[in-house]
Length: 228
Image 1 (spheres, rainbow, N blue to C red):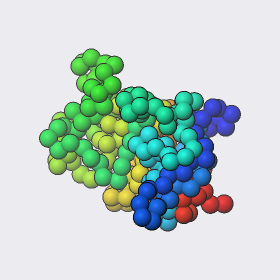
Image 2 (image 1 turned 90 degrees about the vertical axis):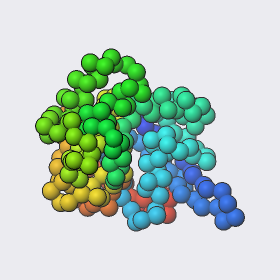
Image 3 (image 1 turned 45 degrees about the vertical axis):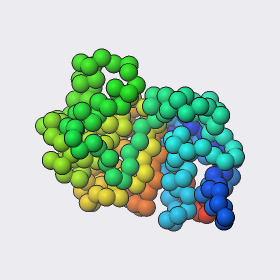
Image 4 (image 1 turned 45 degrees about the horizontal axis):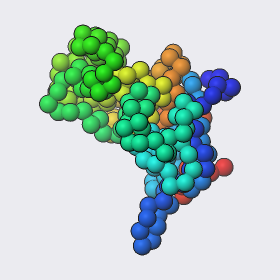
């Protein structure tokens, strides 16, 4: 990691409050930055605001106050379409549950983000999807539907889908939380290799201590604030 690089994503004084009879503060005045080639693990108790922070980083939610910068651009005042375009071109997402579409093959699932971005033709999309799946050990399984894959294979296919548009940052919410030990180690090795070999940034929300230990930096969130 080159600490002098400009942040790919930066959160400044971000607060997220859910309005109601008793307002709930999910994120409370957080400053946070992600730089190229950095593997960051976000840890903390359940309900501490980890996933809420990840949704702000991923432009899936907006801060109540403060700002989120992606590639140096302030995003809070952007329209929904502009935010969606920036998210699609810059960020990849992996969740605890794979969210692969059951009616499509692994290859077709990986092609979906490429279709949405619209930069490649059909042959290029197919070739890229097949290369990503092969790189992740799924070359012999790319034509199978999700229900024909093991849990670990489904999560690797989900990682391939997250990488479809060559994102600068991969955001993962409990990516090993639904996997056995062997599959978890495989997923962790893939994420670590992404950082070490491609210079992408990876931010992982996790309770998995083994995963957090492999990160370059750990950020602990307690009661919506960065602890320590």
